[in-house]
Image (cartoon, rainbow, N blue to C red; front, side, top):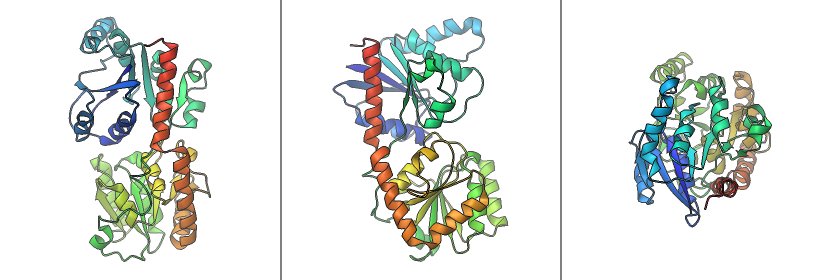
Length: 371
């Protein structure tokens, strides 16, 4: 039995926590014994972890890197909280460039430290040191393999493991039980595009608003918490400037995204930076034709013109044209939506993500002679 510790800062910002939970819920418990460590408790997902009988620890698993002269002592002190658990593999879902975590993991007796690379940031030497200390790296898209891990010393320990989605929870034909159309007085024949993502500059909702303003008759729902209050206020101001108060709605956090998709006609994704966008996968699994900016991660998922439409990042006219095409061509929406669903089933189902993780762990187990 391989004992695996998963680390994540918290379950309060639930996106990454949900991705982690999807994996550990489905791990083969006859081979792997998972535990989770957070640096700060909080969030509803913690109850799900505990309900699964998975140990949940609260302890600092990183320390400040400086001053360097005291780093060894501080690493040793932090490792004390983990030594008695005798973890074999330590898998970090902490998405920063911190390199003290692997030092703590090895000081605690772990045989292998692994991390998942979520985003496309790669500045300074810290990422390189973090990667050198890892026994394996889970990269979420092919651009990462090319841009970050092409060096042979890194490529041979890097695994391509994109995100997966539960294709039963997210599927066509779900009940439209949220009643969003009725709430805003939108008839069944009025075209609605939905976007899902917290209100942050990186999500590019300003591009969506500018494109929507040029598509007469289109309604847009944006689901996501205003995590950047200043940016959320700017988006609200832009909505007023463009005269979109009646056609664009900010819904805030929506817990049942599948039901939201059931009331919408297609999906729009305008992010500037992603690893493998779960919101896009969920929409495609629901059979919704996507329009998305052609960025790393997204271009892996969507086959342009086959399972969705890709536009140049930041290009309002291309986004407007793609949205207009889907809005005015129901048959194209249907064909792209069906192909999108098949794309998810064949490449991005959650079972595939879990299997890829288990293959990585087995490789680590054999290479490091973990019993």
